[in-house]
View (cartoon, one colour):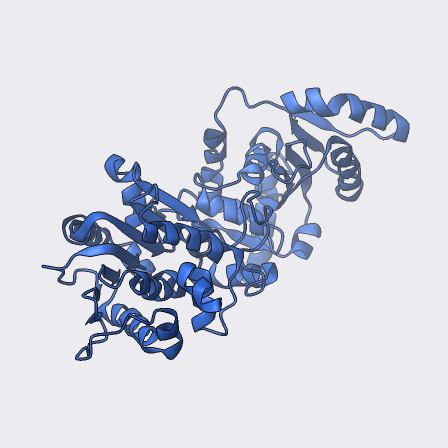
Length: 469
């Protein structure tokens, strides 16, 4: 019974040949598509699998699947491609060794390697089927493919950022690899999204290829509710918990995490907010400074897990007109938002609390007025207006201030803001950025400019005296 299940289903095959194999739900989803490819019933010709590192993608699609496929189709041909010949040989060697295992031969008793076969990356079955692994650019003349597998065609960030390498990869795919397909042949591309213009990106921007392509993308942390997990949940918690993933993000940075783990790459040449612009201050330094405080709120009134976030931006403007930012987002209903506004106002003493006019009037104002009367406390709410200006344009209004070094992030309180900044305008969420952009409407310098100049002159005079000038 076990052998029969392994013969029929890819995940059961993986479990049978590797006792340590512990599949997650995403392996089941991928296996269903690979089984359709083997049966010749898939509704796609090209399957793009986007997964984070160490999520089992190569083991499943580049090692186990070819072995299982040839077990069921020992007269068919497989070509696998990777960024280097060395990695390609490794895939070929591991697949070859599986076929030689007694467990495999028990599942597929009629399939063997040809007795004189010694090569690790180019070999033939006893039924005339073949397997070949090459690096990108490798020779494929005279070879055919019922299945073409391309696994990690770009090695690293440096290769991904090279237009020449991306062009060469595209040329290899279109003029060499893709032309090797047999009728009803299938292409399986396994990768992490290093770049918007990577192989997956170019396929999806080519109308002819796009119409025959299916994409299965598994971000490490869910960005929306899915069939098997909710927004914010990790892909494979038994292997990488949410805490593990957050630690990885801190280690490698938001930019690489967005590409490698979230499958949301950003072109460095098009990155509008530069990491070098970000300046930071300790919370204690800001809190001891003479500042004026302003809060802006980008509202999305709902507690549904699929709903947008409500963004908050706390801005302490110092005597030199620097903005010192704390920013975050939450999911709140109107009552919770009103309660939170009173708590924040009590704690921070804002001069103004800015809320977008339409949402304020529709969902908040009547309840807030009743609550203010009940509590005997009145909040300095200001109605913000977008004035028919597109959100991205409003956000870009922050660029001059960031570029001039006039915005500081309070350490440890702007991580989500920075994720939105570095991936703008391709960010999945921009509620915190939008709340920050609204500060342009209400934030005021702590002192009029002539007072600031006098303060700076006095400080300079004091420094000169201390230095003996």
